[in-house]
Image (cartoon, rainbow, N blue to C red; front, side, top):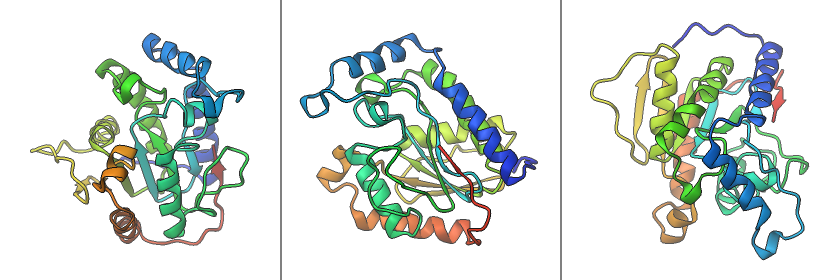
Length: 247
């Protein structure tokens, strides 16, 4: 693991700075156009709502041992609410599972003012803008990976990462390489429940809680709970004293 040394307050301040930089990023013209177009023409159920329509920062406990990494914000989820995995079906599954695991103070994530707090957990993504068809281009991924790298460097208590899907798995490996971690040969392949050790980090694969996966039964609540149970074993436990919420 890289030599990361930050206090809780320094880590929180640094994460806030990263989030501020994310919020004003304009590096990917295609994604800028798509996120704004999605907000301008929402589905009927969201008509009249004010959309965030900007890149989305990470959210959670600045001293977290567990980090959860997704693909990107949903066009009518986090692109609408401004908080990662908030306001869509994927978030419904994720935060309900976090609540069952004792890592969220409530099972629902509706909007940033709903009072939700994460416990020993930080949620983020590889790409910070909603991409067309949920498929960021390689250059768009590369523009965003440094934000994830900065977050992992500042989350100095983190020792376990859950990658939600193959895209997130690849993005995490890229970020860990940027942090100076060892290059694994052969490269670990993504799979649900697959584990890899990269320097001092434990990386755990989990199918993304997308409707495509949850509606078809490819991912069940039990499977998600098993991943969080294993993540808890890998991350260990600590007292909640000194937690600082960032988001």
